Length: 171
View (cartoon, rainbow, N blue to C red):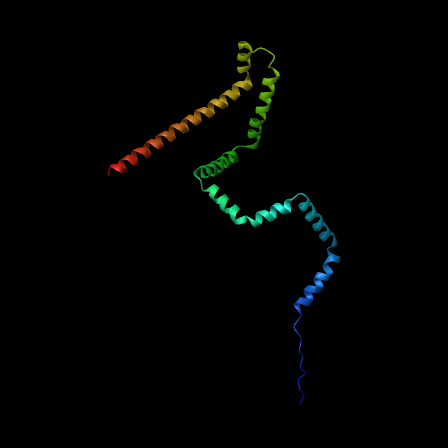
């Protein structure tokens, strides 16, 4: 009877495969390697590597200081306010916000350009009664009215909270 032939395949040497890839890499990726060297040199020339190395060395201390700074009541209020303003700014159409932001330098430019001319009450009244001025005044009054309404609601909520707290203290 025939005997089976033994076929032993040696396992591949993974280190040899890696070594071969590393030896081929400079030829295949020469442009990328040179670009990486240029980037490293630019970071070194500007001191960014030194700053990064120092930050890594002091990372635990920096993290502790950042956490201590954020734990203060003022920092917590600031973060809450930022989140609040993000919501407000996100609800404003960019074209309206752009108009508001552009109005500031335009108004300052007009005010400083006419500095040599005396301010006359009738001229000022005529400008105040223009279509654009009245539109801006109406928007300002709308804002002030809404602001006052919200202040009144907050005062009522605070008064209710204070009366509930005093009642709870009496019981």
